[in-house]
Image (cartoon, rainbow, N blue to C red; front, side, top):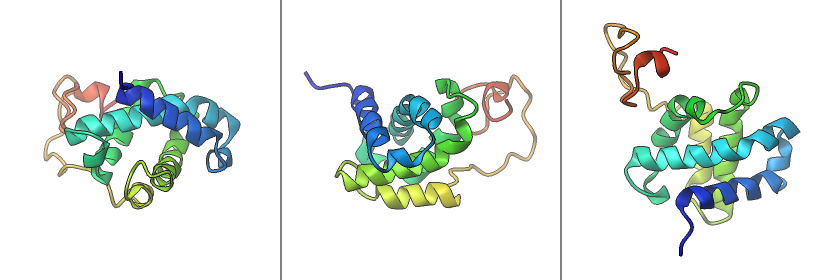
Amino acid sequence: SAAMPSERFEDWAQEFLASDAGREFRPDVREAGGAPLAGLLDAACLRSGGSLETVEAEHLARALRHDLHALGTPAEVRPQLPGLAAAFLSFLQVTGRLSGGAAIGEALLSGTASGEDAAPSVTPGRNDPCPCGSGRKYKKCCGG
């Protein structure tokens, strides 16, 4: 039977973290980075409505901004995640798993793949649905 995508993504993340590219990051970031990287790919696939082949920079930007805090990513690792994710996406391109991975990573780092919706004209209440479209309450998402 085929591995679930998340298991495959976890394997890829561990392979990346053990590679020369992964060793550029601090040991604590490498130690805690596998699950968030796999989760980032999972979340981006869900946001794209398909598989890794349909993922675009915007999906990854939204996943990075809105989904990673739900994955239990340690606070000290969160600031490192955009760079870690960009290096991971480049690694996936080099290893033939994600075409355009390096460009997507660059867009993530430069902020050109914001994935932001137009700013709401009225700030939602804490218990209102988040305007980003995540389906979560504002206080548990962008307002948190």
